[in-house]
Length: 529
Image (cartoon, rainbow, N blue to C red; front, side, top):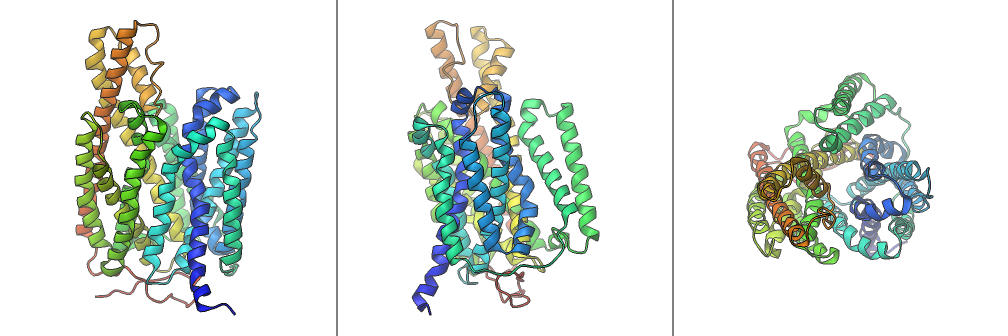
């Protein structure tokens, strides 16, 4: 028989294993974008294929989440987690073994899509295990640790990539293998077995949800490149909307729906979902904008630029625990209010710093990171708390779907804003130097396409003019970044409105499960009124 101390340590060790596993998925969101130029040169693929190599992962993850959550409920979180780790690790090996030649692009895109599916399956099961194995008193803090550390791993992507790419771009995929093995051992050893449910799987709902999410996210990702009114974007949006309408119709009549739409009748649940979307709309784009800002506007190398990300995530991690404690005592309402106030102040302050020589200060980034970290896990936990009659996997899928959608919306809107500001600044500065509209648009497209290398943007011109152009690009991008940060401040201020609308006296802790099964069943929240 295990000792009480050993038994108490099992959830903590399991949490470490889950964090290690899911960290692979968050690192891959940034590390592959960083290695993209090297991969392109090595495999001799065109820029369009390269874009699909990056986007295939994100699209597959977004599309697979709804089905992954339900499968985790039916098959059990432990076996589903192990399958997700195996799929992700195997796909990582396939990415690393991508052959050169005509088949390179198709091979890598397919492997990245499978990797994204593995990430969705793994993430859905991992969050289910975190929620199910945490005591009611520790759930919010466990979720804060999970989302805090896995989110912080996003910042490690550029740092880790800068070292691995020096050896080989294939190493950025192979590094996932030992992490997958370590996490699989921990999960297989420590995770409770749970049970398998013999219930029908809503295949029609899964297909429609995947089609809707995939089309909407694809339209948001490629709208800037293809044109927001282009035929491809309009068709993509049309198919996505039609699939979403079909999904709603199916979920209303199917015996056991993939997602219970009745969840959104709860004002607390719906507002927590919107808060998750808004948090992701700021959190996910910020990583890329800070990376380009540091290298382009400030002229830092990659390792030095990672300090900006580290400062943001230090504030994120510290505030995550404070937010979890306030949430456990007082619920989501004060968390949203404080996060909105901190975010409005922090991002406005950072926007001011971005437009002046010297850049954004550590305190600015710490405050901005704290604002996002304060509410990121409480909003997800609140969705679980207020999901009456739903399963952990179901709510996890909804929570991550909102975050994926929020990230896609944030990237599309903020990239469009950045491009408009950058183009306006460049037009004012470069037109007197003889630059035409096409040249200015080309420079703006290259910069907002998240490439920090601007050395090749002004070929064939005298060195002194070329230097002036490059300095103008750097100053203009700093101004554009300031505009993006102000938009982020406005987004965070919406949390104040959500706090005002959020039901009063909603507890942050859960009470007893509905049917007494601590692993597979839903939990409900009894009103403290």
